[in-house]
Amino acid sequence: MKDIAYYAQLMGIELDENQLRQFETYMNMVIEKNKVMNLTAITEPEEFSLIHFADSLSLIPAVKAAAPLTKENASVIDVGTGAGFPAIPLKIAFPNMKLTLLDSLNKRVTFLDSVVEELELKKVTTIHARAEEGGRQKNLRDNFDFVLSRAVANLSVLTEYCLPYAKVGGLFISYKSGDIEEELKEAKHAISVLGGKLEDVIHFQLADTDINRSFVLIRKEKATPKAYPRKAGTAKKSPL
Image 1 (spheres, rainbow, N blue to C red):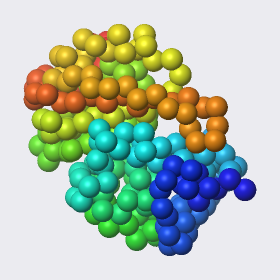
Image 2 (cartoon, rainbow, N blue to C red):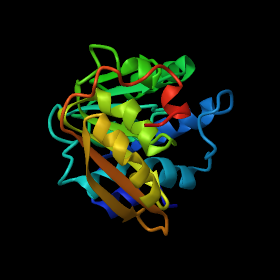
Image 3 (tube, rainbow, N blue to C red):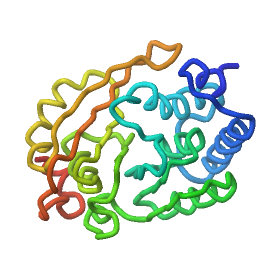
């Protein structure tokens, strides 16, 4: 079976027996909880290992030079984390990461608390808030080295949600799939207005598959204007 051990080896990521147990426990917890709460459409273990675990971890070999997320005490926030992807797989693989998980649904945050406790993960904070609300909180705004999002949304919208969390000099990394050229063009204005600059787009193929992915790297060059993020729902209705 192609499990996380298989995919991690292909990506050059070393996992010990304890980490492999953590991945298995986490998968079982998500699948079990999914019976009573919508967390994922993917519940078959091999597909789960690929689409949730390997895809989450692929960030590391793909952007290693540009984004050293694994350095000691790097501060990382996953905005709209849902069931914990990509952040919890990254945290399992790289325990030194200082991680914040933010989601708008309290039931999901409660579930993530149980995962963090069960897996005995350290230096993890969970926050129940909409992305737009969290981006205005003093303890979160301008506070992170790396901002991640695997959420499905237009890049203009995601940038307004996510860039406020980054320190000046920090990096927002958006997980994307498919052809994103048009989306990148449309997001150019938003990225500039919000204080960012498109640094790179890294295209890659998910290990041992024909699935194409992209990481969009946006560097925060100056403070995001105080007007952003706008109130809940505005970015989606009226993208910059």
